Amino acid sequence: MNQLLRRSVLTLALVVTLAAVALAPADGATTQAPHVDPPATYTTTIVVDDLDADGHVVASHTITGEPRPLGTRQTIKGSPRPFLDTGVGGLPSASGCRALTVTNKTTTTLGFTAFKFITEVHWCWNLAKGRTTLSSVEVRVANVDSQYRYRGVVNAFNQTISHGKRVYRQGHFDNCITHYGCINAYYPSNDSRVYDSGMWSWTTNG
Image (cartoon, rainbow, N blue to C red; front, side, top):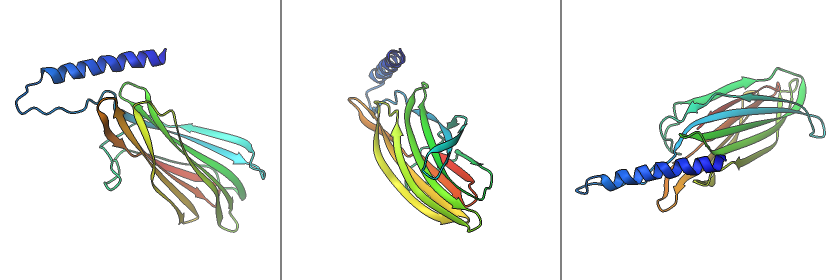
């Protein structure tokens, strides 16, 4: 049902756009590829899993943020968008292991999911020794709409920071429309920080 609704709305939007182009003055006029359903907001969901010695999940905590506007178009070399989502969580503890999963979901103007850019960071800590050890870092995508193409990770680094580690990943998605090609590019980023106290923080960009 959702797919039929989306197809009907997109078809109507495309017909209106093409009609407007057809009626535009021909002298000196330039045509542009229609932005049928461009991205409008992004929402961050955080899942933190407490792990036992064998890596099994023994407790889990989820935080879902509010939709935030994408702001100005971002490029890899340009300045970051002005609208960031950020937060911090956890309570200090002596030692342990956790997994921090950051899901960065982009939603279109019509309210459909364009794509999800996901990073998962596993780490262990020892507060007395001031030690933070990254066990693994995984990047994946989900729910990529047929109008978008995932091009891979374009910026990635791990960094030692005060009392912890920083993991930054930035993806690249193209907005592509049949008969018009790819008309826009989007670069969502997930910036995760994990600490020797077991605490964690994140910053995301749409």
